[in-house]
Amino acid sequence: DIQMTQSPSSISVSLGDRFTITCRASQDIGNYLSWYQQKPEKSPKLMIYRATNLEDGVPSRFSGSRSGSDYSLTINSLESEDTGIYFCLQHKQYPLTFGGGTKLELK
Amino acid sequence: EVQLVESGGGLVQPGRSLKLSCAASGFTFSNYYMAWVRQAPKKGLEWVATISTSGSRTYYPDSVKGRFTISRDNAKSSLYLQMNSLKSEDTATYYCARQGVALRAYVMDAWGQGASVTVSS
Image (cartoon, rainbow over the protein chains, first blue to last red):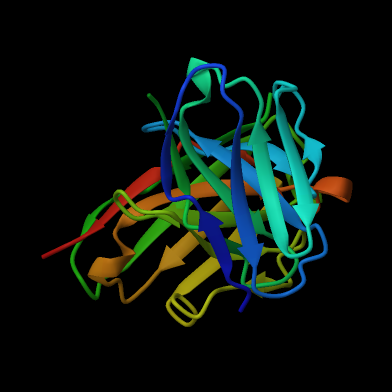
């Protein structure tokens, strides 16, 4: 099974800051990586797919990138509505596996 | 508008069974793989099952293989999850999710609101 190691597990960030979350894949997943945002008591929402593609309606301050086996989600100029938990998902092969999540809070 | 509405959750005793349903609307259900994903209280997301467009192929992680069965009725635009031999560790919110196509292939691009399942005596 492919393991997705996500970091950090939690962080407090100030409004307007730039912030990056990373998922490291234990095997090659060839950009088959998506990112999700989850608000309290809500279902997850797709933000980025295929590592770098912004989902329709997602603000352009969100972006995805890849460096080797590390996949990153970056939020430029954090806004209050960006708080929540972020998860990565590899969909290269079954079993599909999620990262452990990153809880993003405001300072 | 894409909508996925789960139902059938509740409290069930260990060892018993429960069947979840998901009613889909706003898209051509038969064109999409569908999945179930669960989230234990205060925990992360865990993929539980996927079914192909026709229902001929199903996929499960080891944690539920042999106990859970995913199925679909394309005529009714409905997805199901039959859960047998339930354990306390199956306690979670269960989400129905659409897996996308083309560039979004296998991506969970739409989610339901979730159905809560509690396994306890």
